[in-house]
Length: 454
Image 1 (tube, rainbow, N blue to C red):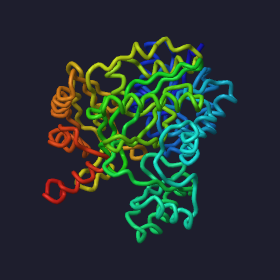
Image 2 (cartoon, rainbow, N blue to C red):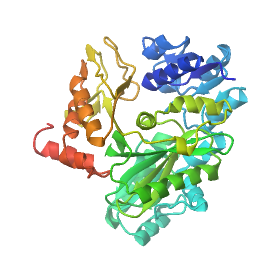
Image 3 (tube, rainbow, N blue to C red):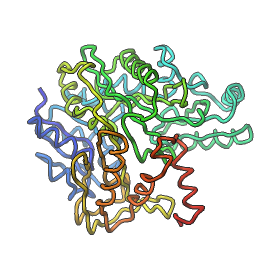
């Protein structure tokens, strides 16, 4: 039985996990870098251990120090959160070798689905539709031939990619060599692996992902889908659940395929299958996220299910007590990611001192954050400082609540994207649900052209 968990993360997700652990009567151990000595997760945890310097490789990516902290503080399990080591199969194996429970899927599954080319092959075997493209990693000559066969534009993707890195679009044959070379170089720098594969670009597509819950006893459930199409340079900024324009027959087929995929790979945790939907009759597997996601909040809001609690219970080998027929979609939810960034400087990160903070509230409003008045945002980590989530009986009600929440939200001391998101919440095409993965980049360019963003 899990009695004490080390949280191998920081920021709002560490705070989020601590809160659920408190509800469950589980003690928590926070780890922190020297830059995070005043962080909220350090204050909230049962115990806290400084494991190194401010850079991630000195602390939150240092497996040996994390495992030492877990063993010295008598932990039973490690929760990796998202980012950092959450999808690192070597870390998951080391956790188990130390006699601890890794709160996530088996290391072999993480490894299989983390290799994007191998994951695609696995989905073909499982009978899940995939985007036309190369069968695995390809060198330049073969990649170019595949691109010519499937037709331009094509996407060159890192097999070990994530977070929008290691991806380049080639619009034509003339662009291909440069895009291929750049994608490989970026993949090598970001992931230490320059293997890439080629896929057809699905035009005017929506990014739809299905939230899954799978235990060790063959039970696999879905918590409906999320629309994550509002992205800037492949980075999500707004998510909502469910997708407002997904036909019911596509929803049923997509969720069934997600469950089938999870069963096929022997998944046993909380996870997500991402699809591209062409807006008509076709959808394609993109990837599987073998961790809790940033936007898990909106799935929680529409179902009333605590995904962190379920994840911990599954890791503790408890059978899932839920059945698919017990899970209902309760209205609509929207999440906005608030970043410390300068919109006028091409959204460049801007860490600094929070001189004043006012958080929104009210019925159907949730805020997940780890910042507070007087907090100093370190320059070493991700620029996301807060998630604002609203829930309404209808999508329009959720949008209206988000507008009010963004009006009430005040973050002074650092540049941020609150005003940008407020403007986006009033855009006619967004309100109508007429947007795809390229919408935000086009919207930003329009704001630049008309002088709104200088």
